[in-house]
Length: 117
Image (cartoon, rainbow, N blue to C red; front, side, top):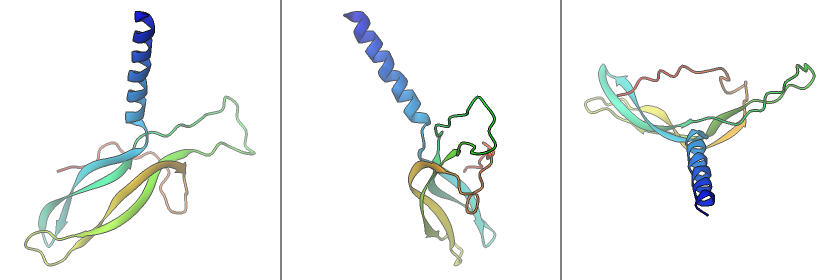
């Protein structure tokens, strides 16, 4: 009985780890500058991994569609204290794995080095 309980606990722990890597909104702080004054904006982005099945053969007729972590976005306005000019910044409202649309999205690998405050 203890073996069954331990196996179930390990499975649940593994599921928890996998879900932390899945596509989800992530809080980030991004340095900004307006009117020569530096500030910081706190927002959310879509981050995480999407499942992708890579076939073990090469077929040029119908390659598999790669999924990316993307979502619904809105834009908010922020003013830095001492500057009358506001700026818009994106906020991810929800995230999901979708097929990459090369007309509206950069579908290549992004640098992991995102500046923060």
